[in-house]
Image (cartoon, rainbow, N blue to C red):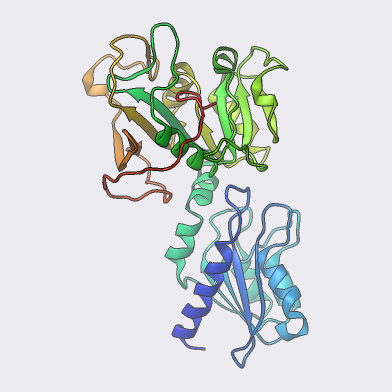
Length: 366
């Protein structure tokens, strides 16, 4: 089958893969099984951790028609046994004659599928639309490479860098459109993390809500780190979803605990002390700063001491995107040693955004 046909079938597999969930411990993968006469005999995509892999779902749909067919898969078939057996072995056992995959598996625990397929007598071609497949699983691949969840720090400040007034109040630094925008982004992560100080001071709900204030059924894990107890009456216990207390003050240990719970993408809120701890540890991968055209002149800074005494040691970030959201400005930036993630444009394009309002807290979003 020619390169044009292979590209077309891989695009279909990528469409299927995009239906899979993120965040998730596993990558989004799609598979199309095509008979020798060009007929699609099976399709599948991964529906999330604990469910059959895309290849297994497609092979089940194909049944006996998989024998002699070609399987187009967006990620190199796995070679390890986890909750399911190796997909490479399943393809061999099904009698598939050829496997075409897009991206090589960056996970060292699962890679090696191409070699297993070769050993089983299957013709293997890799690298078809590899860049598109890699972009689809960019955040997953980054977390695998780091061996920890990705961390996005969100902060809302005044023009002079204050996150709260002298009396501690911070509702509302930013406007309704910015707060609604935060909910849209928070919904794309699988955990929201704050410190116990934020829970005790602000009593946030940490939920994802629609513009009319409705709480969604599916919620990111609400994680709190710190040695102090979290009151049973705290509002974060009121909504559906899981609440986790990480009894540590070490950012790396907190991320390790979340990693072993299957968390791969963390939305970091909370106060300036927690933000500084993650920044000093080099554990922030993305920054979303919502800046209001307002002045306080005094009050709580957006971030605590970073140990910087001279301008020569300033922490510079790489600008990814600047967007006008209602009456505020959203700045997306990354540490200069990182590569921008793919959930926002990579050019500076100021735009306006008139999204409907939500009603979260402007600092640790309620």
